[in-house]
Length: 235
Image 1 (cartoon, rainbow, N blue to C red):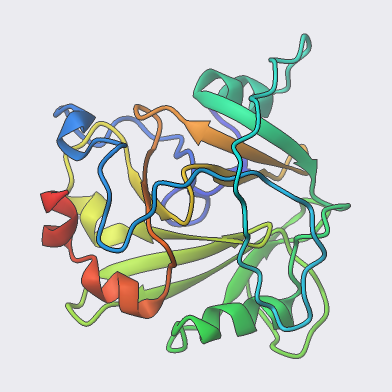
Image 2: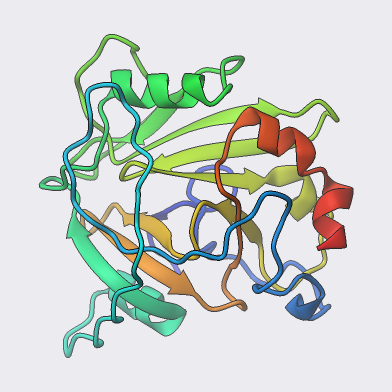
């Protein structure tokens, strides 16, 4: 199935449109298991203005009701509703949670991700721009940002901001894993994804066969240093 929903391993990742990563059941790393410093909270999306200090962490307390499937579905609708529960569909251009380049750079730097450049690939109207480096002085907004992190144990991570939310993809773990789905680290059980063709964000709770979500209290360099391949395999 071809579509431009942002977030797959190198360029577009959450809800990867890839075949299973292996044949062993995902129960070996079940969705209910927690990683060190994890939280069980599921969260509710609220469209708050992005604060000037770029402290874009969400404080969410109650899980909303999932949306019913629309009678007329786009390709992205078909994918997201078919692979989990959809809790919100948000117009990217009007979302007040999208940080600008300065805010995104500050947010990632404040979390210890300082060694690699912060980049973006899309304009707010969904045009693919190629990989561009964010300007720490710019007020221009983009739906997604990413950077790379090499942990103290030399393991590779990609760290994403999607509509103000932070996610981490354990590249080293996913390359070695034979689970049936890829694993993503999140600060809640719900995932924000971006569809560039429709210009919308989707807040979802993916099925374990589409994406395995592991929650931690906070995604930062210190936490990713703890989450080695071996540590993730234990959980």
